[in-house]
Amino acid sequence: MTGPGWTEGSAPARRRGPELERAILDAALEQLVSVGWNALTMEAVAAGARTGKAALYRRWSSKADLVAEVLRQGLPGLGEVPDRGSIREDLYRLCVRMCDVMRSRAGVALRAVLHECDPVHADLFREVIWKGLHEPAHEVIRELVLRGIERGDVRPDATSPLIIDVIPAMLMYRAKVCGSEWPDREIAEMIDGLMVPMLRP
Amino acid sequence: MTGPGWTEGSAPARRRGPELERAILDAALEQLVSVGWNALTMEAVAAGARTGKAALYRRWSSKADLVAEVLRQGLPGLGEVPDRGSIREDLYRLCVRMCDVMRSRAGVALRAVLHECDPVHADLFREVIWKGLHEPAHEVIRELVLRGIERGDVRPDATSPLIIDVIPAMLMYRAKVCGSEWPDREIAEMIDGLMVPMLRP
Image 1 (cartoon, each protein chain N blue to C red):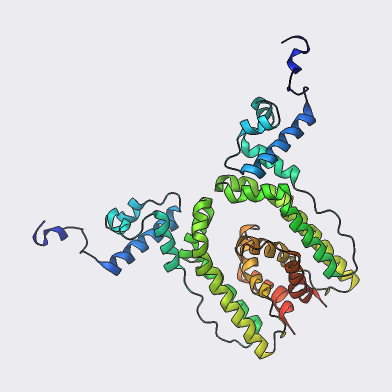
Image 2 (image 1 turned 45 degrees about the horizontal axis):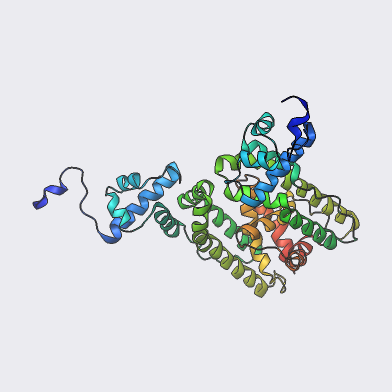
């Protein structure tokens, strides 16, 4: 136990703080994507990160806490939506981006959690999902609508907060209830058939 | 066991067929509304219907089968939507009716099931809910939009199937994600702020 002997063989160099935390979160995301929420164990995550369970429990008191952190850190942001000159193009790009997020590894993990976990945990994850997914989407959509009002291709009274909800509501409804994968063609149909008529002056 | 002795005291007269089935379904709905999906037992339903468990299992092989039948029979239909002269009034009346259905005893039972049951059962109930809730709503909305096109207060190209989904999608999204109770005022805001602009010629 003294000297450099403990790093022999395949054992990794000792990692600390952020580096070890990163490895644990990566391993947990990997587990979520491959086996889902129910089958995920702290043991398997520890093994994946080449550390011990104690290192996990020092940071997160439960599997739910760990997974919440994975989702918080893993969900990619929506980024800036550059002005492409029309509300049609702006909303289309944003929707494609939102669907990409849901198809990302963290998006797949999120859906596994939502689909599998029991109601008690679903309540725990609600805030994580609201802050990581819905709130950022609402903010960007609001911004795009305001940009359209300034530009003049959105009617000035398109200010109901309900308008902001249409795109996330449609993405969720057709994914959950109709099982739609939202191909780009269907996104374009939503923008042209719903959003543009709803918003035009 | 011979003679009329077995109907003595509080024991009910022997019921058969449809009458007994009705009593069982009523007792199961009562249980769902009061204790939810997880806590519902075949014993308690049998007791509520003043019969034995065997009478239940002769008709439904499991709690899930029984509850599916309760939802199938219990969800009130949307009925006819009389022509009130404008797409605005027609859609408003329909949405109020849809929200009433979700607040009915069967609607409360449905939400208990969706909220509590595990993913395996959720898959089983998906078809029941699609046929009992979403499909009828889609049919009525499609009819109202066509009526509006004929009347002239809906644009003739409002034929994208996605248009039919907006109202159910919004009702579901704001109930689930935002926890909205959909007061009538908010329904009116959805019709005036979203649907009428989206559909007008």
